Image (tube, rainbow, N blue to C red):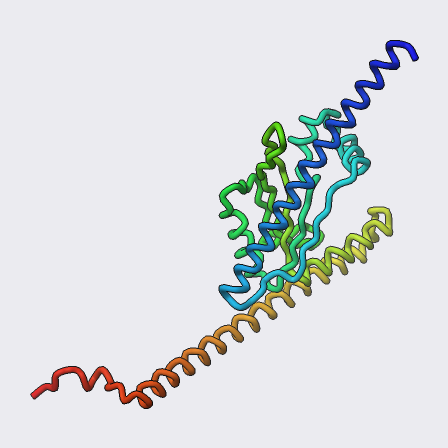
Amino acid sequence: MDLEQVIDLKELRALKFELTRFMMAYKFALDEMNTKINILKEEFNYMHDYNPIEHVKSRLKSPESLLKKVHRKGYEFTLASIKENVRDIAGIRITCSFISDIYELAEMIAKQKDVKVVEYKDYIKKPKPNGYQSLHLILQIPIFMSDREELTYLEVQIRTIAMDFWASLEHKIYYKYNKEIPGHMTAELKEAAVMAAQLDQKMERLHNEIIEIKQANEETQDCMLIDSKNSSWNIPLLENLLPKKD
């Protein structure tokens, strides 16, 4: 083995080492963000007796997928360029029950002390032309390695069950036709997206109505409990304690 081959081998090993550490930072970012989401979910459930999160999915781009995107977008093949330009290497998708849960959860995430929201795209209030709806957040969180701190980007998508159902099937159809969907199917998919949005709105109204009924029942029960205690312990009513007018 000549000197040139030895140098190439050393460079290859060094590149592999740095790439591995580069990808590890994104895995750690996913682990940390998943922990934060679990804490928020349990806290919300404890405070409101209700879990807004249906399920959570995480994914880390493979090196092959990452390099294909870098090539397709025309970015430089350097770790610094990839880190700055490709901000969805690590991704989390959160499926919520209702639209209001999406915004409340996004606000809770943004309030985390070590989380910085660097990009906010609301495709719910302003859907994409094909009908796609979701809330996208690009976050930056610190990851503490053994010798340095890495500020790592992470994408979070938050959507309802209906939005997730539509997006999943649209994705399958899109790639089945090699990204060239016939015109009539495009129109039908958009119509289906509108129907999914209407379903979300209807379920949100029903949800709010149930909350109002529950709150009214709880207030009635509280009043009955107070009356019962007053009667049992012969506690005088407030009006009996006030001085009587002549």
